[in-house]
Structure formats: structure tokens, C-alpha cells
Image 1 (cartoon, rainbow, N blue to C red):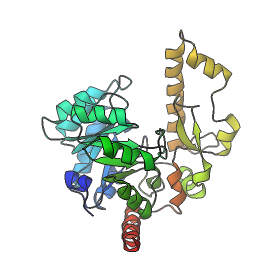
Image 2 (image 1 turned 120 degrees about the vertical axis):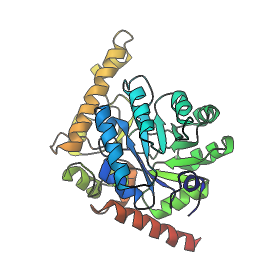
Image 3 (image 1 turned 180 degrees about the vertical axis):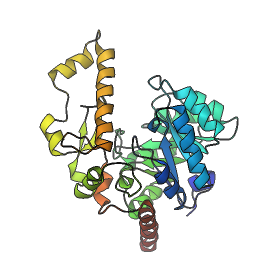
Image 4 (image 1 turned 45 degrees about the vertical axis):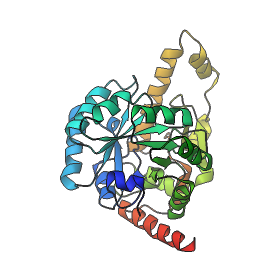
Length: 322
């Protein structure tokens, strides 16, 4: 199945396993690469540059296929420059940039031919990153898991294709081969899929988190600003129902008062990340499980390669019906 994405990255199918905070690991990356797709791992999943470098070497030792690293490129990521150059030194094939200007990443990557795809949520930012020399756009739509955009894929993809010449990869809301074909029909050059890969045998998270992705569905996904200060999707577990999805009066005050707003947001973000980390690695009643509506198609915990095989089969079946 050839698209601009498969041509750029020399992969068999136009699918990126999306970078997932505290979830994506070496085993998941290798399984995705050997299944004919590509995977992208968040640099922030590793606490030190040494740990990041070790992981990149481990991926490359087990697979020669192209893979990427997700970089947070704004000032909140104090390790950004070291992460960027460590990845370039290890010869990663592409970056996905998030939350900031990708200008430096693009400039440094062009020196050795590393590709750069940039998260965008609207046409204005898409045109900006294209002007900076980005190789592709990750169109984060309103169906994405975790932090998401405001515009549905059915509008966002044609919108971006109208104003940009570089490849557009749809991110959000896809959990089946038919869904992938529908995104390609809208004009997307590929898809970025995250939540359906949470319930895999390779994922380094609790069985309870994985099982939640099996037991809950699209109707159980809610938006909350409680933990990171920004809109984020999560599974509506009993604990989340208990504490509520919206910030309380005190939290709202702290995040809107000009004198304390900066520090309150930092505290909210830090508290949220600690809760998410706890949810990923230790099962308890008080957990926050981030996922998107595409867990609707997750029916069991299984090897990652089996999910990819199912997507390939469903894509072929869907194409025969068209």
C-alpha cells in the first residue's frame, strides 16, 4: 500500500505507532517495525540521556527498519537540546515534534537527512511548519487520545490538504482497517495510531490498565483538565467519577490569578504527570488511565503484531468493497 508516507520512510504500510507517554518501549517499537509499519517513542519516556541512548541502540540492534522519536520542543522540556543531538547521533530516521516551534529541530535534522513531522491542530500552524521546512504534518484531530485538537478529521484533513503540499498524517480516532481506509480516502497520506496499542503484551504497564482498554469503550472516554491543566482524554473509571473531570474552585482560581498562575500551572502539570505515571505502572483504585475513543475496537490483550495483521486484513477487505 503506497502513499507519500510509505515512500518517505520506506515502510510497507502507512501507519505510525504513535508515541505514548510512559507506555512506548523498546519491545513495542521493535514489534511495530517488524510488522511493516513504523513506531515513534517519546524521548521523555527516558529520564536521562544515557537511558535514551541505550534504548535507541537496543531498537537499532533488533531492527534495521526506520523509526522515530517524539520531542517536546518548548521550554518545559529542559533536556530538549541534549535529546535532539543524542537522537541525531544515533541516526534516528525521523522526529515528531510537539508543543512548540520545530525550527531548530528542522534545521539540525536537515544536516543529515533526518525527517521531521510536526504535530498541528489547525491550518495556520500547519502552514508555518511547512514554511520552516517540515517533511510532514501530524494532524491531531478531535478524536485523538490524550491531548487532542478541536477539529474532527473529516474537516481537518481536507483543510490541511488544501493549504499544504507536504504529507498529512491523521492522528486520532482510528482503531480499525476500515478507519485507516477512510482517512486515506479523505486525503491523508497515513495515520498515527496510539490507544489501540496500549493493550498489547509488549506494553510495560499494569494488566489493569490494559484490561480497562478492553472493558471500556468509546462512550467511556471523557475530557478532563484536572491533571495536566490542559484538555486530556481519559477512561471514566470510578475514581475519575469520584473526583470529577473539571478543576474545582480553588484550582480554577490558582490557574487564572495572574500572580500565581505560572506556578499553579506548573504544580497542576507536575501533579498530573505523577498521577499518570502511577496509573501506568501500579494498579490501584486511584488511577488515571489515558486513552482515546479508538479503544472501542480493543477486544483482548494481544501481541502488537496481531493488531497490525488485523489492520492489514481489514484494509484489504474494505478496499474490495469500494
